Amino acid sequence: MRCPFCRTLDTKRKGTTGTAPTGLTGVGKPLQRFWCHACRRSFTIARRTSSTRSRFSSDVVHQAVTDYVEGLGSYRMLARTYSRRLSRDVSRSALNAWVAAAGAAAMTPLEMSRRLAPPGWGGWVGIDGKRLRIGSGDEATLMVAVDQTSTDLIHARVVDHESGDVFATC
Ligand SMILES: [Zn+2]
Image 1: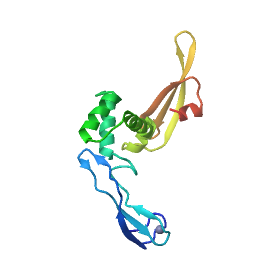
Image 2: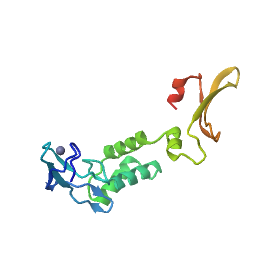
Image 3: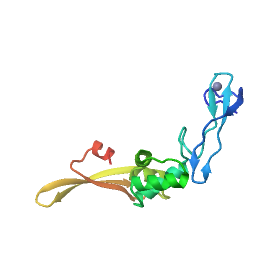
Image 4: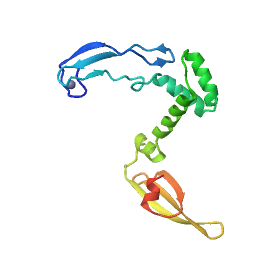
């Protein structure tokens, strides 16, 4: 096994981790641990189904966050449901942390369109501002981001002033 720190192959198996994350289908297997002779550090193979040191695998986290976002229950209710379902204590604060992390990891519309890269898009974004008059004399600016090749609208937002930094926060 190649060492993730120094990239040498001078490593050997060295037992397994003591704990394993609990998933929807039960407790996972402990991970194989390795020892690197060159840099004298131990490591495990990257776990694909959960983040390091997490007590629950990502399918549990994903399902719980989805339930919460879809309004299937309060933190208190979901904590009780999941604790019973997994036979392992799921706290309200853990649920809260999972939902907060999912929110922080969510992409903005602009990042999403960049990721999806629809066919026909050139990848060059043009940003333009249009002055708007709202109600009795209040002015605002409609900022639009448009793909220059397809002229598809990527993102639009009404802001107080036309400037680069307001769009950066969209
Ligand atoms: Zn190493």
